[in-house]
Length: 295
Image 1 (cartoon, rainbow, N blue to C red):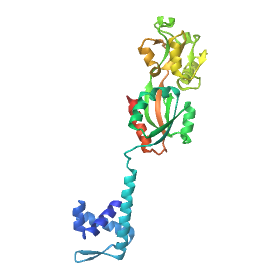
Image 2 (cartoon, helix red, strand yellow):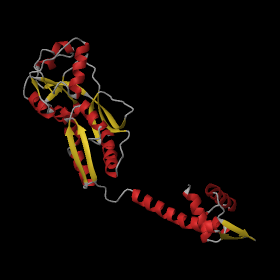
Image 3 (cartoon, one colour):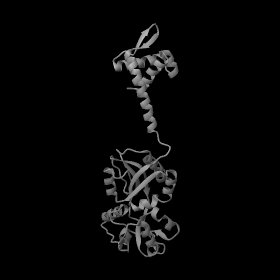
Image 4 (cartoon, rainbow, N blue to C red):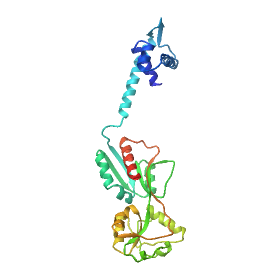
C-alpha cells in the first residue's frame, strides 16, 4: 500500500474536500480523485458518500482513517529510527595481515579514533584464505587483504590500491653496483622473508616457480618492520612492499635492487560480504578508510 495515497486520503478527511486537499498537497484535483479511487479499489470498499459536491466518510471510511493515521505515524517513526544517529557507535571486527595493520593503524587510526570515539575495533591478523573464511562465516565484518587482485561476486570491494613492491638491500650492498640484475642471480643470496604462505611472499614464490627458481631464506619472520630493520644493518636482502620500507628508503638506509625480470602485482583491498548488513559504524569505517586508501 502506497503511503502517499494514505496521506492524500487523510488530507481529504482533514480538509473536508478533494479541492482543499489538492491545494494543501500541491496536487491537481484530478490527481487526488485518482488516488482516492485507487485506494477504494485496493480495499474493495467505498470510503466517501458524495452528495451535491459534499463528502462524508462511510463507516468503512472511518475505520480506514483510523488505521491510515496509525500506519503513517508508524512509518514516520521508522524513518526517524533509521536515520544516522548523531553519535555513531558500535563494534567492528577486522581481519588483516600484519603488514596492512602496520600501515593503516598508526596515524590514520588516530584520526579515525578522534572522529569516531565510540566505535570499538577488534583486529585479527591472518592470512588471506583464513580472512575470507572468517568473512563467509560472519566471524569478521571486513577484511583488508594484501595479495593479488581479488574479485569474487560473493564479496564487495569497498576500496583498493595497487602497491609497489621491490627487492631491497642496505645502501652499501655490493649488488647495488650493478645496473641490472636477473632473478636467478640473487636466489643464492642471504634472504630474510615473511612466512611462505603470507600475501606478497606467496606471490613471489609463484613468480619464482614460473622461472623454475627457488629462494631458501635464512630467516622467515612475520613482522615486516623487523625485516626492514635487519636489512638496514646487514648484507641480507628481502622483498617488501614500498609502503613498509618508505621511511628507510627516503632516509637512504636501503635501496631497491634493479631486478629486471620479476613481475609481481600486489594490491591492498578492503572487502565486505555482499549480504552483510552495514551499521552506521561500519559505514563510517568504510567511508573513512576508502578516502585513506584512495589517497
